[in-house]
Image 1: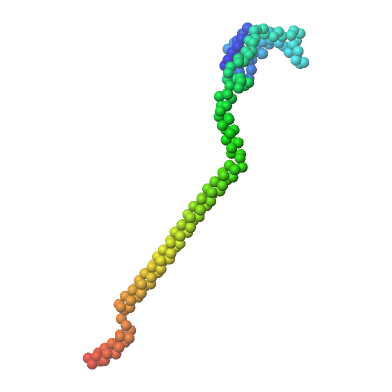
Image 2: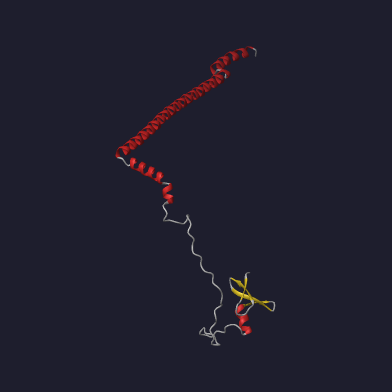
Length: 189
């Protein structure tokens, strides 16, 4: 807490955001309240005037004069020295600006820009055609692979059917054997 001396009461008071305070009898008291208790401070009435009729005297003290700004090369704006150092650069920039504003130069620059755009379009067109060819190749290989898978599935199914039929006895053969077996069995009865 910063403190300062009150010039009227000659005592130290502490300055805070809430106002001025002093320490009196071990307690923190506002400076105005301590002045009123001591009878030294201004006692104001309802109209804001002092009750004792005196006008407060302002504190006396020395006021430091305000220093005048000193002239230095950094803060001078009237001097053409910065412009002299860059005169050649500015002249070169102005010459380039004049050359670039010539209609023939503008047409050349525009033609060069259009040529670059056309070259980019051709490049992107070539890349798109190449990509389309690659996609067609991928689709054709996909169709070939699907046809091979279907062929192998049909072949596997036919092989499974053949194996099943090879292991299953023929019903006509069994019926023909039944008649002969019955005749042979009757002979042994």
